[in-house]
Length: 386
Image (cartoon, rainbow, N blue to C red; front, side, top):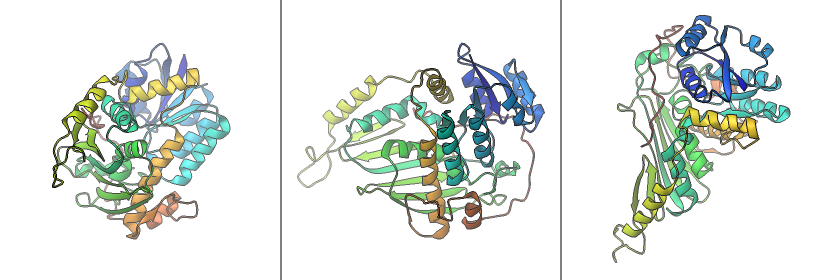
């Protein structure tokens, strides 16, 4: 029975707690830590846990914990992860992995040195439509990918950035590109690989109480010539998210949709005719693929528990988390410098460190108000892509 602790009792901690509770024969939540101890106590009461509440996470280092879930603001992730890894504890970190590539490297070095697991939350990978889409692409049924369209479209009211740690480059590390589109950018990199360069724009059109962006567009080029575009937003009504891949043979996407037009079925003048046979072939293959057993956070936590128990590989480790962050940092650098950015981003780059990010990114507004906590209302954590 693995002993689990949760650090950070904010809204996202509920997703972690509920996921761990799906595996009562494999793990037990024994502690919740938050700088506001009453929030930790409330989570314990809410979920009827046999756990202790602590305000100082250092006390957890004395409790023989096996696995810790870090659900705190991005600027704290690196120090917390390194402390627990070096204490011999496996670590699961909420997105984004950290606020800089330098911090990611410190986390990965600690994991490599200690041999403990470091996993970064990317719960969208553990959803059936995303798993199936990945399989269809890997099998090459759509042909070589020539274009990808990723829409990470959310809506957040003006007060969203009143929370004390949000809306600053120092503590939140960025706006919607880092903290909302991270899941969709992770999916792009997972399915298509890291691009070779990016051009980008970002702006703040609706939240004058935040330094960070509330809308960005990144355009990526791949070495083989393919292009991809990512829209990251917290100003879109309807909160629709999608990821579309255009292959040489067919278009496939999450939410699932297929359309195929190939050279073999095109009209003599080059105009398209649907390739019904190919569409049916891909549809049959899609339907034959298995549904995931556990979706979202539960799927990732199952993966982490299995890795601890059996030494099976993690689907999302610290190296994967770093690669996603590197693409996001590329968007910020390209938008801030108004110049194309080549990957990889190297250690001597001004955008490699958190202090360099703070100094060189565009600051749209100054944070005008700050509240310690919001009332414990439900939050949205993404589409099911169905």
